[in-house]
Image (tube, one colour):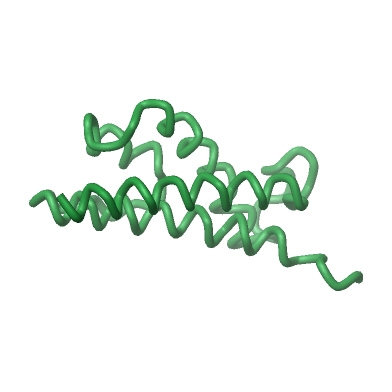
Length: 109
């Protein structure tokens, strides 16, 4: 095992969790009770008109990381190419940063 094996899947998992918590925090801030879900696709409709539309598709893509990166042995084959690699981790981290920036601005209003 090389030094980076297992790290990229954790980056993807934590990026997904970051976005989940940011969206739930935004909902809470706006007076909504966030649903008990980890699925970002379930949260996006609740944040309608709060989050920029161009981010919604990117946010949905993070859902593909939740189960296989949290439980890599639970359901083999969820990610067709195996665990995420560096490019997927960079993409997930980029989306998480953009969502955090946007939600931070919305919370400051």
